[in-house]
Image (cartoon, rainbow, N blue to C red; front, top):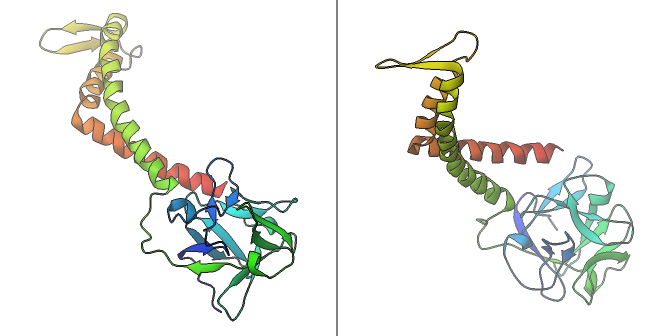
Length: 229
């Protein structure tokens, strides 16, 4: 049976509940039938033809630790995160840990674990396709949050810059009527004038827009940096 790669899915356990990322501990649970961001997974194939189970919520990969617990701990794609996948004639999938050789199961408490090599009802998983793949992920929320912070921070910075203008003029320059601030060379580097321009710019609507763009850019690149590390 073909394994759907690089597409959002749900992994439904024998209980009818879906595998999910627990936001508090990172543990993999199957305790309800929710179909939100925490339950959407993506199956990724590695260069050596093994399978990674990745949470769409935060792009962390499911790993099997020494005790057999299944945890969405990081974005590694090493032995602890790799699975062999088997299927049967009834459309069930079985995920065998390359780390321990045991098969992922949903136990009586709703915990995902790899405790034995059985391929019975507790170890069987159905692949279900979501009605929509448009969800709020952790990455999207970060970009929006950084955008909002940037939009608020830039005008606030403008107010601070405006408040600093008198002090800069006092220390670095002289106000000339009809001209502006005349600065001592090599001492101020145009400090007061720069603060005046920054204050006017940053307190404007365009300043807020620039802040939002800067925040979004920061969120985007921080996501890439996190993925690479």
